[in-house]
Length: 89
Image 1: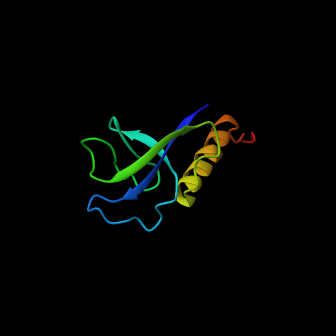
Image 2: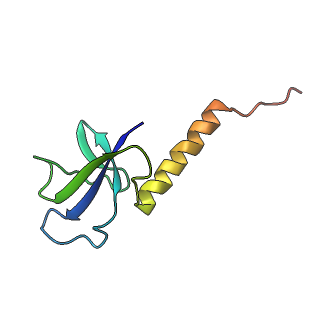
């Protein structure tokens, strides 16, 4: 399965991001692309920031916060498929 990652280089004001070498997971929110960790929108008509995008198969996300969210979703998915069984009294 492939997914899109994005590197935000400068913010809306043209200032360099302090973590500009970090790749974030790109998701859609209300039909527009944004980062998973901060919800920062990017793209034409959404933001004046500069960014780079790429599509990767795996291991493309380097943002610590995005990775924490991904780990949480994976644990949630496992728990949904293996519900806790209650003992009968």
